[in-house]
Image (cartoon, rainbow, N blue to C red; front, side, top):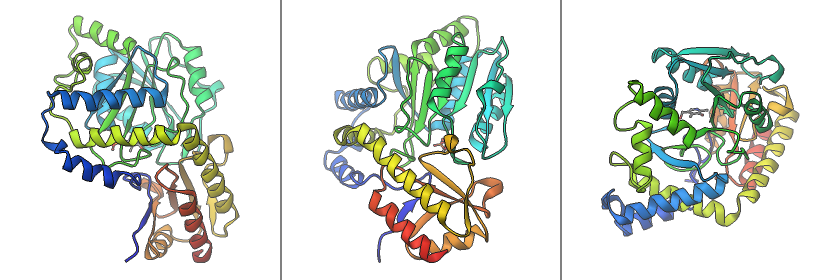
Length: 360
Ligand SMILES: *Cc1c(COP(=O)(O)O)cnc(C)c1O
């Protein structure tokens, strides 16, 4: 049987080196080491240094580990907000962060646009009392990406507010300027091509200071994973609870591989594959690119409307070992989503497009 090729947006194709790293991990008995041991601290430190280099993190940033990116939404709301947040919402994931803010009795302000659309900065007005602005770099449900220049411009307009970026499905591709944001976060089972089970939270000292202030004022900021506690552990390259040591080991190795290949090279390849995908899909009968404004099109999750039932097309491709994603939520049977992550090669993208052309 030929192996399947996954173009799903998460869980996604596994980065080609992961199987060998996993074997090595067991050979080195990594899953049995103590998370208080120097061996663990060395893995954490290596991962921190790699991530720091990939994202060009300033000195005042910590790299923290959680169960998933979903957890980071809760952590940010509990630790960095007393009363008010502001959310740019254009799909299911950005909406969920807003919903969490409601559940935690914050006062979230909503700036929402239709699915498939991005944001016009001129239309955005953040109220004075807002403490944290929440944006999503890559809305995985719709294939809309927010240009990094727009994210940075928000900080220039509102320098006193915390600016936090969901880069769950696009990291490590966007070149964010981390001096212009206060936190960003991702899960490893998307563009990093790792098995699920680890969230990564890049967070600066301003967020830590805010958490400390709120604690001093008596706000409940959480328990084992409150920011002050996570940061204290980070300073020893440890984690408060027993973490996903295997996942962390694999992240340390794959980030090393990405750096070895060159992060610029990876970003260039992603751009090349994205252009190929958009051009080919645009030319195909029966498919229509969902995001109309080219400036808002995601490089890493390409979404298209289907003329017929998307489920049939997805099944026909799956029969030929090409696994693409369905539409999200309300668009499940009317759209396809094709992930363009570093784990899939140009050749694989070309193979997919060839099979799609024959199948459409
Ligand atoms: C997948 C995803 C999340 C949630 O990630 P989990 O790993 O399920 O916690 C959040 N935001 C975006 C944009 C996502 O694509």
